[in-house]
Image (cartoon, rainbow, N blue to C red; front, top):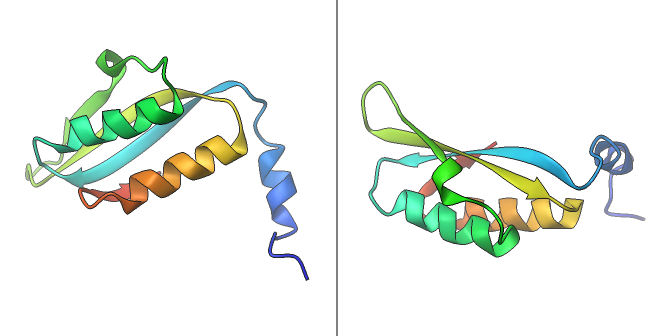
Length: 95
């Protein structure tokens, strides 16, 4: 029996690689968050320009969201990037 759901090939077909792919990363407002996210993103898209990272604080200032639009080249690249970002202790959610 396969571990891949029948929807997986259909989901992969939604993207035509390479493509611009926005990632929204949310975590606690911490000075180290943006640098940690940048370091991870650069491992998967060496051409990513950190100056294009958008940062927005929550209304209470306790959390921050970062938006990074990378050049996605494959589904495995995106999967690995999501896994590494979500595993980081400063990151709470990745969309």
